[in-house]
Image 1 (spheres, rainbow, N blue to C red):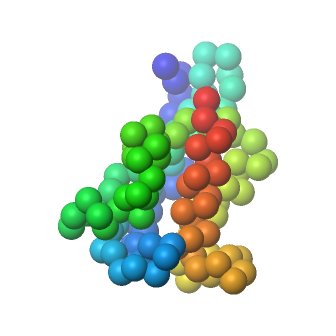
Image 2 (image 1 turned 135 degrees about the horizontal axis):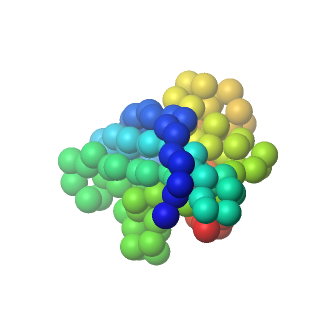
Image 3 (image 1 turned 60 degrees about the horizontal axis):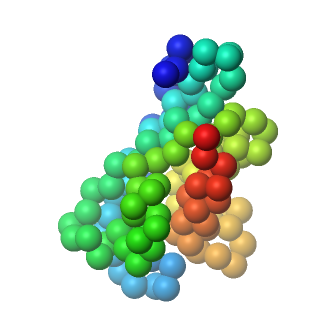
Length: 121
């Protein structure tokens, strides 16, 4: 599918709570590649691997639509907007806290992940 593939980010995010404040134990491995397709268009290939102690420790446990369709990641066009989404996606919680306002970094990242699903290729 992709003619060219370059690793741009690889990080592990530690999820210690979900958006309603429940404690969870989950690591999310995020790997992001930039690929160039046959038409020379750049896309992000965002890959998620979830390390869970149990299914209910997943930050999207109650969102079956996400789990069915987006749990493994996304392919999205690379452009200035998605550049920023990806940049914020891979920030650690302390760095993201500086930008998340009143929202916890966990909820902010969850919203970024959900937003990315609306740009899939």
